Image (cartoon, rainbow over all chains, first blue to last red; front, side):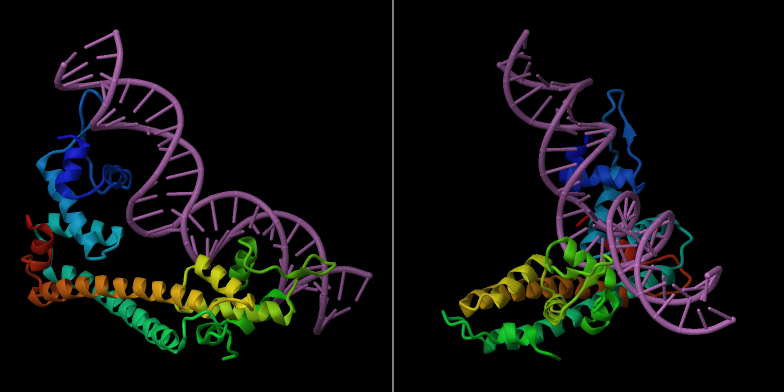
Length: 129
Length: 129
DNA sequence: GTTGACCTTCCAGTCGCTGGAAACCTTATA
DNA sequence: TATAAGGTTTCCAGCGACTGGAAGGTCAAC
């Protein structure tokens, strides 16, 4: 199948798939006209990558996950380890955003939001400590 | 004061401050030796930007916030609007991360994490829908 | 044979820095 | 006075993960 079909089926733009080939995540065949030709296995890989990306895994994590997926002698501990480290990063990010959210929410609530210039949000950003 | 002093006081690396000048956020003077010379006003601006960045505002948001800060005839509604839109983006991001977290947590819990190859995490990523 | 949809490659841009190289300036010490 | 250490300058390149666009080749239908 051609790139737009595999893209539709995997839920990824053609551009992204070309990029994934560029960085060596997939290796589709080429037809005599130079078009990429994707097999079912390529589609599965792309869908796998798409789901991993959807869970926030980095490209390098995806590469590692694909390698583990294809290594029938893997230890599930290695996969779990990868996932747990990713989970920790997500939790850290959530905490960071939560902290921002808390401060911002307070500032927004304190601001009248009318035509007058007085603004606790700006004062909050400007304050000396 | 020189760049490293203002950097220390504002809590920003010198590199970042040069970058902020590049993109026109600040406009420090220059001494006869070509060194940047920062006044107190520059320090305040940098600290302001640093705090806004710390709350996750984009550089363009920071530019707008600075402009509002310096516009004594601003309406606080404009500031509040900016902040609320940013807050909405943060909330969306948190929700996205939470969703990832939920799925990942389930997968991680289901995975034995031992020497055997069976792995629900990989199966989860590989499954057809 | 011509249209229009698809495919190709390559280059550049996004965001917000960050690292490094090469060269100049300042300050302290021997 | 020499020199060494540390601060400063500019410029260029790279990060991650794409995305947009240009210029051109290919294919299927009418």
